[in-house]
Structures are given as structure tokens and as C-alpha cells.
Image 1 (spheres, rainbow, N blue to C red):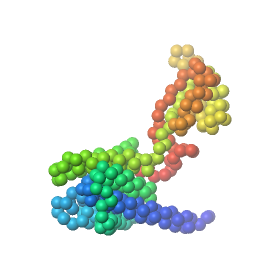
Image 2: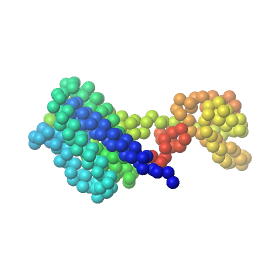
Image 3: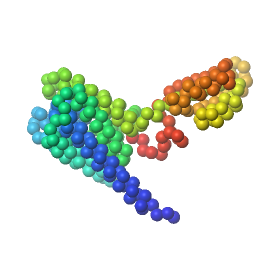
Image 4: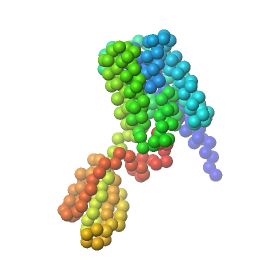
Length: 291
């Protein structure tokens, strides 16, 4: 039996690297762009920005303090071994937030700060999630919710939880503009996070009902290298058996597939619908962790 120790060691080091880089990027986004412009980007990091203005202490310090009860929840829900990497990420984010805050503000334009901060935070969270960990805070809450509602995407759950913090920032700062810019950061974060985690793997799902199913399937296989599946159908009115072709294609390949169907059988019944997630050969691995 092959020794798997070197493989496990490489995987461990890779995950540690992802967590380290992701946490540092997250902290830099908070310390260089969002916090200096008083933008509360939702979640625990947003609450930390608010508390640092109201009660003092640095934002990174508040981030660490508020995460303590959430980490305890995580230990109870997922076990200490899983949360160990989250503790490392949380401490690193706290340190990087405070340290990067000492470097000064990168931009005083709140819109640019919201864009840059939202993108960087999403990249940081995505890298940490890909390593099988979290950045603490609402990440743990979102991970709990994903177990109960796997059909909801991670970025969307963050968006829901962040709205309350953004609304609260309008009251704390008494500045609607600040809250709106923070909302921009949250929206950008949600969009980019889904992009980092899931990629742009939108595809088209095509159903083809034709009396020339064999010819169509052969061309799809040979000319476009598209996998096809035959399904057996039966016309309700005629009672005749029908072969139904099912195939999933990349978005840019869909028009070519439609051309093949049109050329082989102009009378074919064609259904084209969108598929936001595809698992299997040529797409995402089904065996990877669903984040």
C-alpha cells in the first residue's frame, strides 16, 4: 500500500499557505481600505469597525474579541480540529488589520475603497474557504446554515447577514452615504466570493427530441466533443417511442450545438435552459467540499 504521508503533508502545507494568504488579504482589505474610510462591510468585521469608533480599541482587536464566543460555538458544532485553523485565521486577520492600519489609508475616495475592499475581502474569504477553514465571525454561522440549506450559495447568505450591520452603520455614523458605500462593498464581496468559490461555470442544458437523434448525437460527439445521454420517451398523442438527447454544454458552445440540431432536423423539438452548477468530467469535482 502506497505511503500517503507525503501527499497529506503537501496538502496540509498547501492549506496553511491558502489560509495565511487569504487571512492577510482579508486583514489588508479591512485595514487599508474599509476601516480608514469608516465603511462597515457587514458581519463581525463591520461590527468591529463600528465598535472601534464608539468604544475605542483598534478594529482588529474588536474583531478578535467578538470572535471568541463564535469560536466556542464552532468548537461545539464542528470540533476543535476544524476550528484550530479558524483560530489561526482569526488571529492573523486581527493582527494584519491592526498592522496594515498603521500604514495609512490607500484612498480617501469611499467608492474606490468600497470596491477595492469588497474585492479583496472576497478573495481572502474564498482562499480560506478553499482550504476547508473559515475566517471566523459570520463565516462559521454561514457554514452552519449551509449544512441545513445547501441550496443557498455562500455569497448570498453573507449578503443576508450583512444587511443588518450596514443598516446599523447608518445609525452609528449618522451618515446614509457611508452606509450606502458599505452596501456597495457588501454587494461586491458577495458577487466576487461566489466567483472565487464556484467560478463562472454557467452552462446550458439542452434537451433534443428528434426522429434523427442518432445523426444529431454523432455530430455532437465528433464535431463539438460534447457528451450526450439518450433518454427514452414516448409521445403522449402518437404513442410512438422517442429518443431524447440530453447534453450539458459550456455557454459559448450552445449556439454551435443548436446549429447542428437545426441542420440535421429543422423540425426537432429543442429545449435550452440554464444550469448554474455542473459536476462531473470537464466541470467541477463532485467530491470537493461544497462550500
